[in-house]
Figure 1 (cartoon, rainbow, N blue to C red):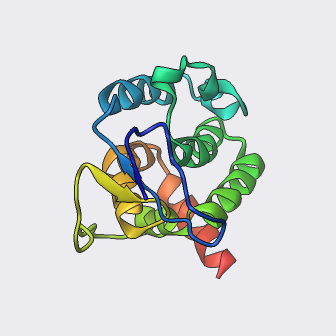
Figure 2: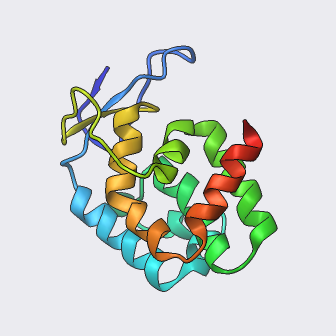
Amino acid sequence: MEVPRRSQLESTSKTSKIAVRNCQESAGRNRTRHDSTMASRPATCASKSGCERNDSSTLPTVEQLVYGRPLALFQLNRMTEAAKAFRRAKKVYPLIAAELIKETHVRPQGWQEDRITLGGADQAYAYWKEFGKFWRKTTGAIAFVAKIVSEMR
């Protein structure tokens, strides 16, 4: 199902979790605001509603919140909470977790910069492309992810 705006994710049913979103609409504003929040104030992103306090035109996407929280908690050395938050994130978006620990990242077949499939390999690649830098820059974060992923298998 095509969605005209990034902020209007929809799916046709519970079993059909495929949604297409337009990433061009305000993508720069969303990512820039969330990027600067994660980089400068991890405690804000670690709070359950911290990143949600932005006005509606700059809200981060669901996967940014779901995966941003465990990273922020990890940066704050709140390891038990970070592990719990990451396990939840992996259950919701397992392909993003797998993408984070890959050695090489290859664009998925049929990749389109302006459209992604919710829960798909292209969403995982898009997340890594935008936010993998924060995971890589945080010492020990990728090893932390790899350990949890291997424990959950």
